[in-house]
Image (cartoon, rainbow, N blue to C red):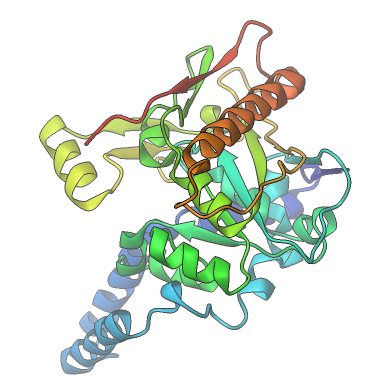
Length: 342
């Protein structure tokens, strides 16, 4: 099955695609925008300083006490995530979504393992909008997100509104036991930092990363390989100084790069330097059957490694089948790297 989102050919449609994409992809700047608004309101006398202090204190308190990321998600997250009002964002990206194979059985659980991460994490958009329920009717996985996201204003609200869960193993295993399917990007921050739009190699940092497969095996979730094409050309990256990289990545598990995209914001580029449009693609491979097995089983480790090899092979095959369609040269390849120890 294939779904294509075409760019608008009129000014109004173009503006909607641009404006909505600008607001959504700059969710990391929402805090700055709100802070500027508060300063203006206080300076203009519309809000008292004391009132603002109380509001901020209440916000921090709810951040510490309300933690849907470790349990039951926001009630209306499916409405937010699968809303057709978000479709212009995929149109802005010239998106094509392809499901290889028949529809999935909605009575079963799945782990959608996405690659590559990319600088902006645009791959996540393939799990949203009206297209998802057409591709996978009745299948509603929750994204697993890094724990620090829930303590950064703006990113917290975006994450909770879309029903994400904490990516810690304990939380994922508990939610899987309750019947949830899961989205995750195994390559994580290191894969994000390895993204290079000028290279003919697409790096997937997964060679010695087995944790996600272990979770799938222990929970009995079929493993769905997902490859996102084209994101490496939608942003540039500014590397922080090495001492800051070490602190952010090692201590706080945060990215140590600053994405720089259109208008010097987080809005992705929609064109190559020569003016041609970038058309992004998402390809969902057929699910890899997984036999549920306890970690105490003597065959567990061997089975996990075998399943990991199968997943890597499927990713590589998806890339080779579809790379030409999404603007990759014939000589371009996908390489699988080892996770560097922190």
